[in-house]
Length: 84
Image 1 (tube, helix red, strand yellow):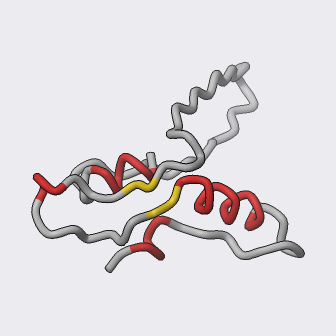
Image 2: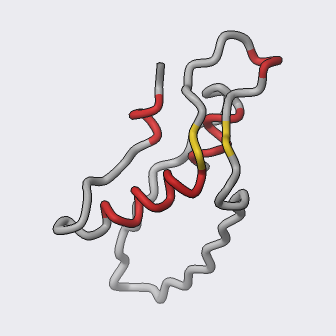
């Protein structure tokens, strides 16, 4: 969702990922991730007006997001940090 937000120049916004527990019903989840290759540089499409994001390298973004999952390794990165 984050890279689609960049490509679409905010036309499509990545959803917040939140889970609400329900003790009365069983919940099943089947996540699906479709990501570009790690070497991909993502930038807003030129046909969508003035870019609101700097170019984001997917591999670098993913690495930093992963490091942010561990507070002793790095800080959480958000797509908003790449806004111009």
